[in-house]
Image (cartoon, rainbow over all chains, first blue to last red; front, side):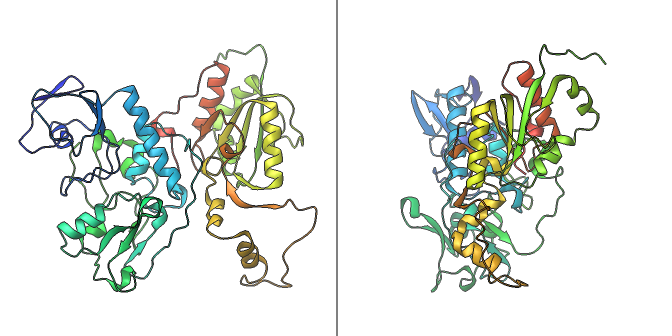
Length: 238
Length: 184
């Protein structure tokens, strides 16, 4: 057992703090973590305080008698700033985005009380990719969580999607001779095509299926229903 | 209904910069809730009054981002004259849809619109000195002046405007609850 904000949490050997907390029904904000794939530890939204240090709960192993703090004013502020950095770093225009209302980045921003970016927008120029017959890639919305890369490698066994480059040049890339998604063996049936927490990897057809007000996060905050996609509910228990 | 009437009406100025007036429409879309506002607020410069210059105000509601020199000038006038300057809507907060032109150079945008666009007749790029010079990029308000409050949304719901005005009347920060804190 360990303590999360004073609540006793049971865990199995090998569980991270985040996995154990979610199994016990406590939500810790996250974007790059998914229970089906190896932890990435990159979005930092799951930061918690352990023994005076701030660590990512998705990569920190649960240990007996640990005192873990997640719901503190300081960490809520850190998470708000992290979300604002993610918004400022890309080109996130919610009003014209197909996944608005079903987007985990937006849902966390709502939940953390974000009203504006705080930082000046970086306005990067990113290459779009419409070369695939059924999938469209909008790099402007990519948050570099590598969930598509992990799904492609660990479940689809294709390694189509990957992160390439360093620092501010880091970007989503596709393993093909010309670097285009259309030249890979990516398929709509791949898990990787249905894992993006934002609106970067999109089907070309069938978007805007829900009217505003009836989308995933229109009424119920992400901390009560967890991280979901419309086409992939129930994977991630809060 | 019994409304508490403030000693002095709250003076409100509004303007739309690189916006579509959708936020103004949403402000007016509050049904009967607009009636008691007559007792608590009065308008200064606004498309609703057609007053052209801004004088000292309690609240400045600015819709839209900055796309030309006139937008910058108006924004600075609002900042000078308004106690609380409010960025209203997605475009004021992050540039919004007009900022999608930032993917291209200004020259490319002008050529696409006025020279190479479908159906263009007598192609020429407008150069009348009366026209405000376009800025190379569309930027949000906070890159130019200090903003006191933000009303997100495209447009922000009428309830968010009401909460803002109520908060100023009660001398507190506006609290946008989950259902009225929208980005779309």
